[in-house]
Amino acid sequence: MTRLYRWKTGTAALMAMAITTGAIAPLFASAPASAQYNINQSRTVTIPANVTFPVTYEKEKVIVKPGERMDLTLKIASDIIDNNRNVLIPRGTDVVGRLEPVNLGSVYSGDRNNNNNKQGVRFVAQELVFSSGRRQQISASSRTYSQVERISKGADTGSILTDAAIGAGAATLISLVTGNRKIEVLEPIIGAAAGAGASVLLRKNQADVFVLRPEQDLGITLNSRLLLSRY
Image (tube, rainbow, N blue to C red; front, side, top):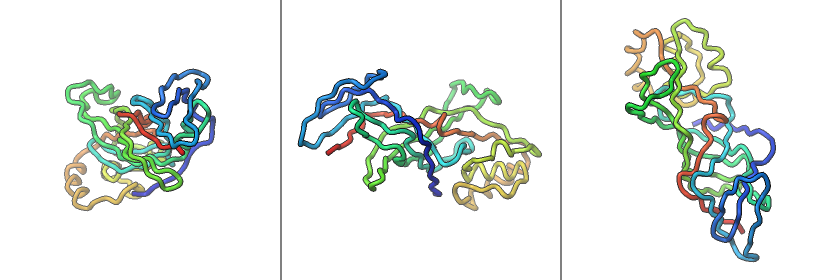
């Protein structure tokens, strides 16, 4: 996997939290709430489930085909802070995970191009990696994204491919449908997998891909509480 790095400067994310040595309770107020600290002791701070962290990525877009899995490392977009403005998770912390397909079954997908689409994709976070090298397991995921962009034979794909990281499966689709052989992929294409679909794809004039914009589409929400040690 190619790991690309970028994060934007900006105002820190103000998470208004009431802190004890055991837990954080988000208040989502415009100003930090009061806090209690146990001086001279290490503190285990708990961020509860359902708190959402903003993320960013080196590229403006990430493109994958329906059903494709792809390793991906995002970054925390803004400092996650407590009520005393102590930084709990610094801006730029790596969020290691992967894009995973989601079977929507009979659920209507909201896809403006193909109402029969039954697949989606989401980012599943596995680890936080701090600048010190410390790793922290995390259970979090983005919302499920189901809107596809249609790539047609002979179409100009410039606007879609500009500043995009492209998964191997999506690159194969786009290359075979459009004839563009110079698509830069995020991961190496496995020959057997690419060849298996080539004979079918060559008979098609169009293909659907997910075009994800990480800052808009891949913000992660905690599925369970996150325990952080502070000293």
